[in-house]
Length: 313
Image (spheres, rainbow, N blue to C red):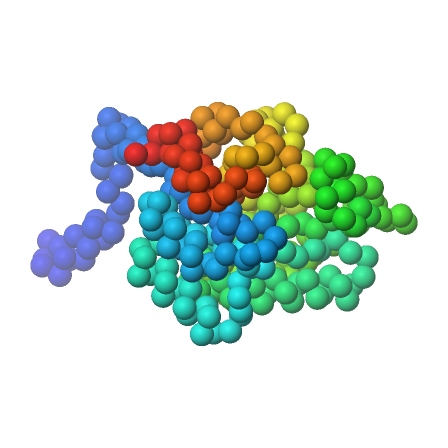
């Protein structure tokens, strides 16, 4: 073998993955190390503002996250003071100097509307929010499917356990088609910006695991995944969380110290942690405190609860 052939062969060999040379025992050890990865904790800015005055600045939540040892902040779009570039840069700078990642932009949009003009308006809003996330270095945005809005008041919707009738003259199949079409229109921008769309099990079409999975299974794209909100399956949540766990790319974890704003769930987070562990989830878990206690005391308590359940030091 001449020198040139030797170097060429060596380079080709070096390009092979090292796992090809691992013994079964070494491979098992490597897999075991991977399985020991733990999710990272974040805080949603929503934990400090439930749409009632006063509105807590996002910068304050970033600073609190650093103080409490949380790794990331999930920004509620409606809580932002501005969409101006200078404001976005201020948030990015505040996060960086505090050693905190900006992990999700939770937006509100509604793809369930018989009007093509309204759906287009919501698609445009989503695309704009993808670009905002990109400018802030945020790798994901929270999507809702949207709902029929036959129960106009949100408090009344919560009294109805999130269940509302289909808009007269239309069908659920139409709603799913509208939602799927709208998401597909947003995907090119998501791919261009490298921002994952995380569809939440929220009110509307995704109120059930079957509804959420129907949409996720219909859209074949690595830029769409599921967002597991632990507090949005009001009855018998654990089998439902198990159903959506394999598609989950982001988690929002609810707590309700002081009693919930609309309802209170007694969630077993050790059980939730086990569900996530079984599907190999080790991404972010963002705290959404939705109780009436002061966030100044409830947020650190909630983080401690989640750390204990997840086995995070």
